[in-house]
Image 1 (tube, rainbow, N blue to C red):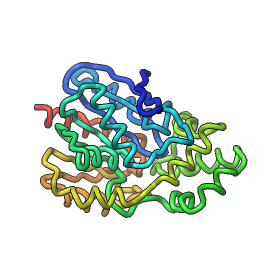
Image 2 (tube, rainbow, N blue to C red; image 1 turned 90 degrees about the vertical axis):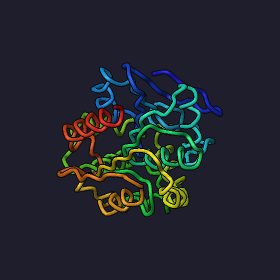
Image 3 (cartoon, rainbow, N blue to C red; image 1 turned 90 degrees about the horizontal axis):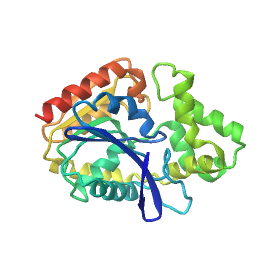
Image 4 (spheres, one colour; image 1 turned 180 degrees about the vertical axis):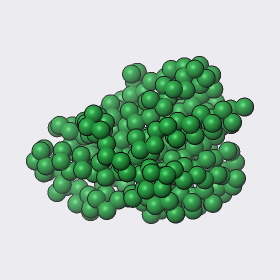
Length: 270
């Protein structure tokens, strides 16, 4: 991993491959780890970029630093400039949808195409547990570490339609444990502000690029009706439902997702 220093934050990132640029954006409570295998599979034809948003994964988790959608979009804009990318293809999941959409809709950063998989992009969003934490972040941040770990493991496991492998569950949980990770977990949920999603929704009609929306048919965090509404609001966007997949589409339907990614990117990259 390399790091990009931005406004006192340390943003972890990595790149590999050759060809047109494809940037992967993760969501919450995830990190770039969730996209790594898919990115690696594309390195023969594309230059792939992975990054951890500030406050997530291997990036810095300073409690003094804001982690809301607005800050993340500004960080993404700065990182794209640091990479000197012109109109990259962007692939986003969960929060990555809101961040990537704001980066182009508000900050005017152009993309070549956009693939949105089970994204947080338009209101309403958030699982029941997410809403509970949002209401009581300070209280839950003080629970004993073993209870916190159990909560995070159960929360992450609930995002999958299929039962997660222990190794995958451990990898997804690890960044949120310990003296740094535990408060960061509750802090990023407390920073959730749905007004950013409303701004995105108001501007979706301005998008002028190829957009593909994928959604797990069994997503209990954000229903497929939200994905359909999102696609309908974007001029020319296409929508596909992925059977037997929940919110963690990367782990529930990896073959279907990998096939969709390569087919889409090959199509839009010419």
